[in-house]
Length: 287
Length: 327
Image (cartoon, rainbow over all chains, first blue to last red; front, top):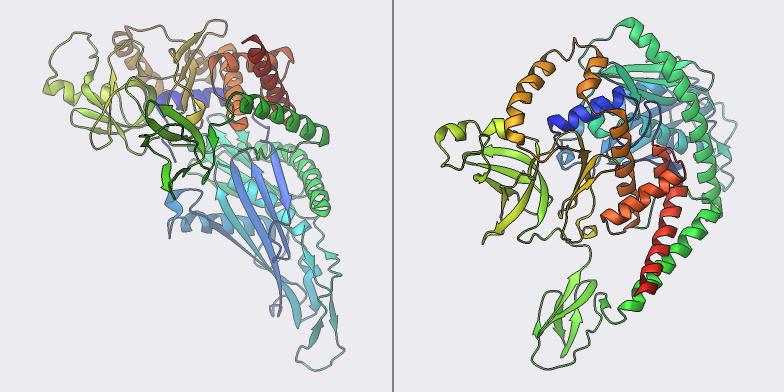
């Protein structure tokens, strides 16, 4: 992270105030998003998302496991993010742990709902195989390759793309009445249990700089932020999760305003993302 | 380098390929023998040559060890690598960021393997008098440049251990404010006579540093700036203290006006496009790109879209073929 001189900081803040950021974007414009799916062939699903210079990869691996005793009819999802040292030299070793932990918990919050599994953006009931005995465990891993701000949005988009690319093997269960599980996992080429991602929310981060909020902040703009609110909204316009970062307090009216802005912005982001994912899938099929 | 990470549709891909092919054919016509890759044999036309950087003796023949262009100077043959780190020479204009303030000097980071040093004695003093630097001057170093400031300076010399000494004795050099800094690859900036450009029609100062740092900012009059700065510094300090309570409209007054900001952003985006495409960054090319975007009435942010990339590549191919024909 390079420091910024006073003059540059003033320039950035002034730009945000005047609705003309350093690369000509308006406050609510995203950088061009570039999506590639199927980048990791060994995983059940994977995607790489680039937003400007921010580059993240998400992969989904599915394994059979036991559902938890409290929710026998739901599968399990674990999200973990790793910040690679290629993004920042300071991420080497344990340096990136703090950021990784923050991003992982933020994503879990936004996509998986509360501890009881209620309100999860990802439909967990579709992951169950035999109720109470066998379910799919999804391990979603995110990797930050290059960081230029707005990691949460990029990771959310990557996870959505990876999930849409995920093929869960169909499982045939032998009709056993015993309490031991004995499923026959038919990992045929018919992996056509494509995960249904229409309900998966996208995450929109609104960064407050001065009096205004911006969407998709670059690293320089993030260094000037006072606080940031990340909201995950699904296609129906419902809020699935919300996180506030940054030390400066926010008035509740400001937060309500941010929510309405996020609603508006996330709709466009979702459309853009869906079209990019479709294009990426088409490209993948061609190659 | 060409992996532009943009979604091009089919026609755009075709057009881009064509333009890039045209550019390659234009350049290779001029220098048939001089581009080499690793392992290529370098043709040697005389005896008693000196083998320079990037070459090695392989079984009696001269082979290249890097990808680049073969340069021959008298009896010296060497290969100049294309994508090398910035290599400073005396007289280069560079832009650096202050990372440390140590007794009697500032340490600047200039996109080089080592940090450059700007001595207090190589800087003009605020009062403009030429005199010996006293201890008071040393204590006031922070008021001239503090950490993270952007400084424009000239390379004075490079020491034996490879470290650089800079100087900023001219009126043109010094602190850079009210603008933005861009980083491009150093090999895209060639040495020219002029690195400071005042673009009158836009009212913008453009400084193309040889180290790949390019500064685009509002025009500042070539200064008795130090004297002026002292006065405005105190005003700025007061303004900053009241910043949080100040109305934003007032703040806009001290900030860059919208017109200048649009120009700065347009030029910055033009440079971004050129550097992504791997074209040399010169004022002419930048101005042409900006004119192109203006003539198409493109929104500033659309300059970073795929259509404009293709157009810039095509216009560059056009320009180079025209200049070749003129010769």
